[in-house]
Image 1 (cartoon, rainbow, N blue to C red):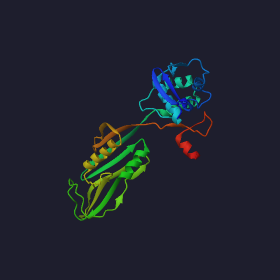
Image 2: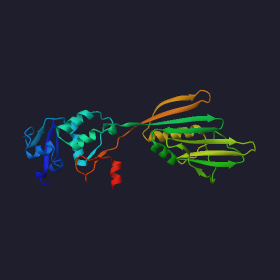
Image 3: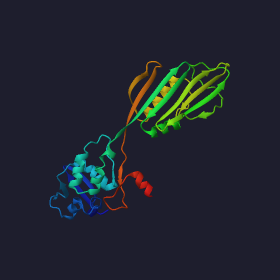
Image 4: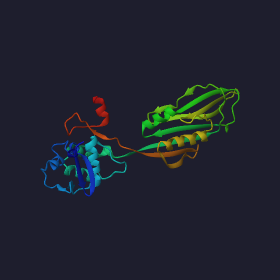
Length: 274
């Protein structure tokens, strides 16, 4: 690459080196006029073009110029200041993306685990504000049903060796919750139905509700959820509720390169066009 294809910018004391074609891809922008020498506000100092603007925010602008995407950190809050910088550089496509600020804000994903232990059975119901979390758990949780003449000890977590059990997925009352239970259900004819629960990638099959609860909590923690509260939902049946939260990163807003600058598509819209 020829050194003439590279340009070095000093933006508020921060140094950036990139291709001149990256800076000049929007002909109507001030950045293009800056490299062409048509904007006298930008001065060449020691082989670098000095720009008296915010260098930290310019890093996001340069990333947009390189990728045509706007993907900001989860804790980013300077939308108005970044929009002001985009207006200064006359980058209309970036201004349009920043006008969609509500799409850029990180949103928390919430999960509630309701747990009820009654006699030799334990019942679970999981609610989530994000249906993808429910889909993930549904794919990992399997219930195995066994019919035996003698019920095993409730506190035992041993799984009968060489026993083939029919696997069942948890029930899905809606897109945002799932239901399953485990344990021993003794009947009057001296037979017992036993439900074991397995949660991938753990290979154990557990009948003890407390152990299943611990494994379910560990699964959510490994998915970057954080336990924020525990409470008793009903004092009558002592249903416990565990509440989790995860900050959901916003998706990158993408400018479609095949359209004229100023036409903005979200990622899922862009995929439908293909």
